[in-house]
Amino acid sequence: GNSVTQMEGPVTLSEEAFLTINCTYTATGYPSLFWYVQYPGEGLQLLLKATKADDKGSNKGFEATYRKETTSFHLEKGSVQVSDSAVYFCALKPYNFNKFYFGSGTKLNVKP
Amino acid sequence: SQTIHQWPATLVQPVGSPLSLECTVEGTSNPNLYWYRQAAGRGLQLLFYSVGIGQISSEVPQNLSASRPQDRQFILSSKKLLLSDSGFYLCAWSVGPDLGYGYTFGSGTRLTVV
Image 1: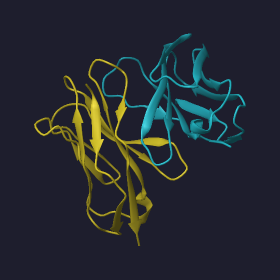
Image 2 (image 1 turned 30 degrees about the vertical axis):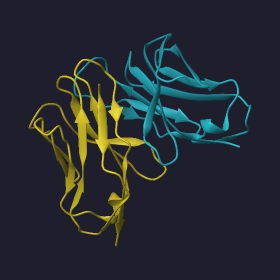
Image 3 (image 1 turned 135 degrees about the vertical axis):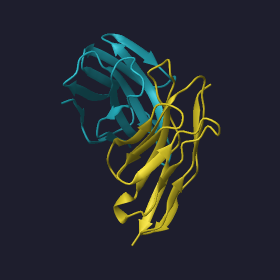
Image 4 (image 1 turned 180 degrees about the horizontal axis):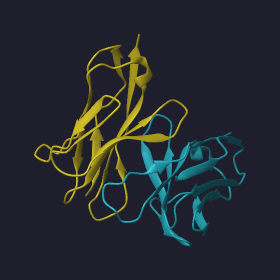
């Protein structure tokens, strides 16, 4: 089956700290992988994506690399800001079906 | 450009009352449409999805129903709300069976059943 597992939060960091949010997946075939971000009181926004193995998605200083061998898509940022405080969702879309599977979300709190 | 509208943003309803949440998409045709619910402190749960007018697939048995009366309109309904229906409801759309395209989400409706 298809599923996504994210590290549990909340994650609390100081400004300018390095961020890693772990995401691993289970899927048949070769899914596309996504990170979505949800700022307080808002809907979800696509942050970045990768559609095949070894692809690196990047946006707003965030990066994630599609690792087929470890079935992972960890989100990283070298220096977080207070404005990055949000809930981050990892998601996959199976190669043969237009339906998404989301992880449970990881809340990030960045303190000044 | 494509946009998605969802309303209302916030709703407080008594137990046993009906519900109707509406979602419309502009700037695209024949989108796939989805309703998700996010319960407090939990992840996203897919409730319904639709690949065309009148075509609704339900992911989980529940107190809710969905309808798609027009190509770009998706409605979430309930005849009698339960306390457990409280949550953050998100509508989303995506293009057809293309690979690698994510969802575009609406801004959500926060429903509190009292």
